[in-house]
Image (cartoon, rainbow, N blue to C red):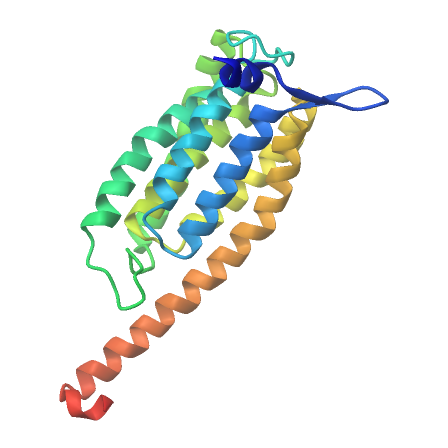
Length: 232
C-alpha cells in the first residue's frame, strides 16, 4: 500500500513552480523501453508497453485519480486502454509468428497501396468523428488534436502488430501534434518524451526499412540459388 500511495502522490517540484508526476515519468520510460523492443522486433516489447499504458492512463485521467494536473485528456487516456487491447493482439501475433535466426518475431514489410490509402482515410475520418465526441465529454482543447493522437496511436499500434514499416511514420504524425498539445495541458514529461520519440520513430523507420530490404535480397538470392550448398 505504501508503494501505491507513493506512486499516486509522488511528484518532482521545481524551484520556480511546476512539477513532474513520477507516474508520468515512469509510464513514458516503460513506453520508451517498449518502443526500443519494437525496433528490435522483440516480443517482450508488448507486455512492457502495457505496464506503461496502465500508468499513463491514471495520469491523463487526472481528476479521477487525484492527480495535481486536472486537465483530462480523454484521447490520451482512451488510447492507453486501446494500446492495451491492441498490444494483447500484437503480443499474441508476434509470439505465434515464425521467428528468424536472430530471434525477431516479425519480418518488416511494406503495406500495399490500398492499405496506405485506408490508413490515411481512417486517420482523417476517425479524427473528424471523434472530435465532437471528445468535445462533448470535456476533453482538453484543441480537441481535434486529442482525437488525432488517439487515431494515430490506434493505427500505428495495429501497423506494428502487422509488421508494416509505415507504422513508424504514423507515430511521427502523432508526435508532431502531440508535443504542443501536451505542453499546453501541462504534461511536460510526456511532451519532452514526444520530442524524443519523434527522432526515435524516424530511426525506427529507417531500421525497419533496411531490415525489410535485407530480407527481400535474401529471398531473391534463395530463389535464384535454392541449393543450400551455395551458402556454405
